[in-house]
Length: 539
Image 1 (cartoon, one colour):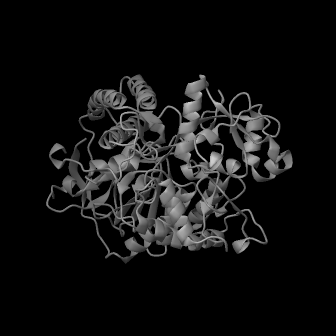
Image 2 (cartoon, helix red, strand yellow):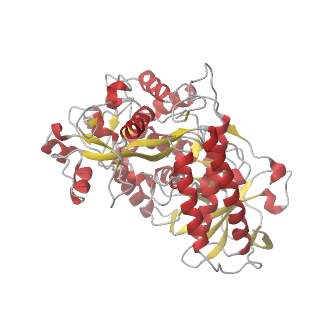
Image 3 (cartoon, helix red, strand yellow):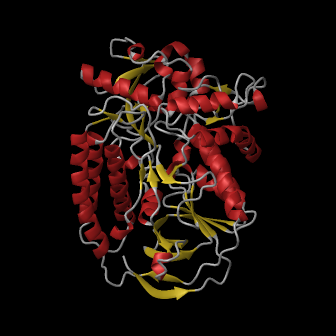
């Protein structure tokens, strides 16, 4: 989409624009708003971020039986050899301060008078000790609601619902190819259908992951890889996109395809079983149900295929009704509304795409390859998650790196963006057949599920890549001919991210962590992150 040369000079200091209103975006906003005006864009409602869907909790190295070294060890063990030690240590060292800050903001964590900071700590898969601070089984929602209320009350934070970023405005738009910098964004106001030009002192991408590229996912509708796709188009490196975490236990029910059954339930002793009640995890890992998620997900996938099952069972009946109601009220109530009494019946579960362990390459201050562009949270690759994310490290990463990014932006010299070109839609028209977009969306998600899922082969990956390129040609033609809308923009970003996932998977000639290939079933003695670099000659 070309941009015209019409422009306007901002009459007020340029704000920092944050794309995404989840924990990463709100953490940056709340820390930064003391020194900068901030605009936060949410492409749907402000309460629809993926953060609110997180059930388990957030890591804090708090207990007397815990240590930074222990948390780093567990993170690196889950990450299967390619976690960045410096990143893991930095995040672990900052975890106690992150929890303290959330408590200070008013997050209603579950308490325990005998626990550190007065908090009840639980345990999840891959953790050596109890170190997960939580708010019953709806931690993400409790954190998100608290920080969102803080942001709404802050006079320097402008929260905008139903605004979707279209693309970054870089020096290329100004004809300044010799100097690379992000100067702002084009954003679609979904209420009016107009694309606006927003100058920015800095842009922060906090748009989450790419879960919606798969047919079955625990992610909300917002998880369409927008930030990753925009950063890639702007020339940033992308890393480790082959490592898509499939959560082992998504509720299997015809009326509910995205409801997560938290890992904490297994942490408290729930068992995975076959239909006859036989436990099967002992045949796959000595840690049983508390093995890392990639191992548990592959074990479930193996047993489903071996026995011809649509799902397996998660049995928590032995924990007792009172315990389940007290510690897992959200799961108990939601399952009960669907006719499943988890105190008397096992829960049908199936793996589903859950978390994107790769993304935009950043440093520990959220800086990308493009000056003026930052990224935080699931949108990024910092080296923390390696080949598999340790449970509950994701919320922690958002808080720690969100604060660091805000500090870095605040420390940089004041930037006044140049006059920016307005969005040009003089050569496009309204779309005539929106069904094309929905059909392409369905096709993409289905073949990604079938060909680029928990177990992969080169043959499947090349089939997926061939279909992606056909879809891309159709979508690019559509994008160049018609006025943009949310569905088209999301599909465009998902196809971009799908190709990044497949290309990354083809680059890895081994099985490691979340990436399992039948063509390369063994792990290499030494391995490194998969880093993709855009060929600037191809735009």
